[in-house]
Image (spheres, protein in one colour):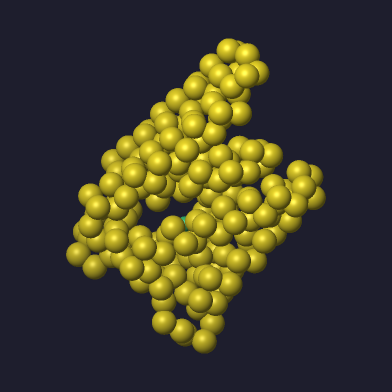
Length: 197
Ligand SMILES: [Zn+2]
């Protein structure tokens, strides 16, 4: 769900232009950035879903026990910490926007994940896990990501061109280039994840 996350960051950038784009992009994958070292240390794990024979599992084929980074409470705490860091340097609005984007990762993961996201860190209290499991239908999931990505890029492009208008052709051209780069990176990311890297 990386392309979809990026698309959402682009949408927010079009609404909160003061938040640096790199911070919004980083915010979209912030939970996964913390997840990777925990995965390497075996604190969080991915196991192939039932019926998946090859390992490591491909696009959407894993049950992801990211019990700290992707627990509801853990995601809220990590997102707030990231937002606070940005707010300290770029102001309250930028901090709120990046914090919200960081948490949007969890919300966007919710329809995709296969019933593996706990409420509390470490699945404390053994409460029921969340996730609607859209990843069981990879074509539908990839299409959903594509739609979010295209919508986000379009909103970003429209807002960037609007801001640049009246400030010279150079800036308008840069807005087109930035939106084009965003579109290209979104397509490449989605292509790579669907190709099952
Ligand atoms: Zn995630």
